[in-house]
Length: 338
Ligand SMILES: [Fe+2]
Ligand SMILES: [Fe+2]
Image (cartoon, rainbow, N blue to C red; front, side, top):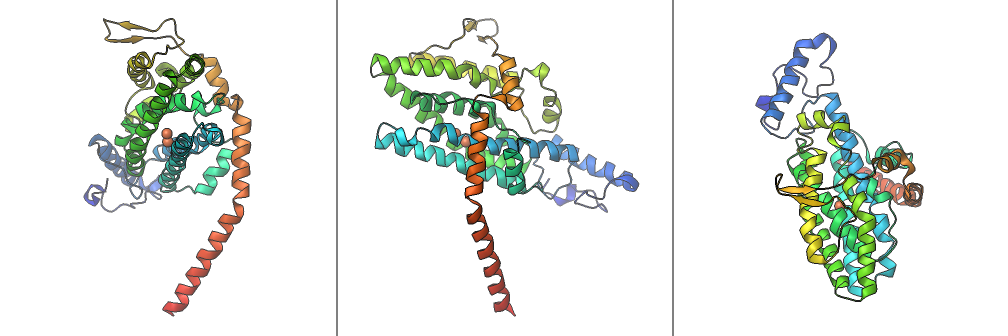
């Protein structure tokens, strides 16, 4: 909605006063917004948007940003124990990328009128969530490879359609993030391929890791469509472009030939090709476990949040110093102008 000619004339562009007595103005604003969505145009921060759209986006983009930042922890766990300088450098680069993804997404979220400080508070107080997958521990070095292959792979399936999401700053952040995620996926796959060409112990380590991560990776797409109450509205608003089950199917179909090339299996006795559907049939993850994780009872949730809280508190002096420096620079500039 960047074209100002699409904004109804004579109305408050911010939309904040367009309610109550201005009923016809509100209807015009809503019609303008819906026309933008129908044209598959982007909604931009200064455009009027329904409050429900803004709230849904804040929730989704914040949850996404938190996932990038919390996702640094399980892999960061292996930086000091990477088996070679090359592997350490790759893992460091990957974990740094995730910090960058968090920053792009917090910035996108700030354009919706909520500050990064508020978002961080909501995360460490447990009022906003992060992806269920980062509740699981990284027990062996093979997990670094499995996370790259399956977790970043699932993230790519989820995120490529989000490059076309209706909110401009979110969609543009996703374009860059997806490019980096595909590097992450390949580094994970290459790591596992190297281990699979090693010893029997290494091959067993890879298979054990894949066994642990397969079901949590499938959960990353969210609950089944018939139990996903917000999906229909998110699709209607162009925030979401595909349903959870569609994306999960796409991920399974993509992963099966990759597993075959690698020489590993997935722990699902129901997994088989369905010629009629031209797709794989597969079993359901343990949705009770998923609900427990979503409620904050995931295996590593307490540890992840405590670690994030400590990092936030330890960084307070940096934020204070940066604010003091910015204020000082502003007063120097003002004096220069006067
Ligand atoms: Fe990421
Ligand atoms: Fe990633």
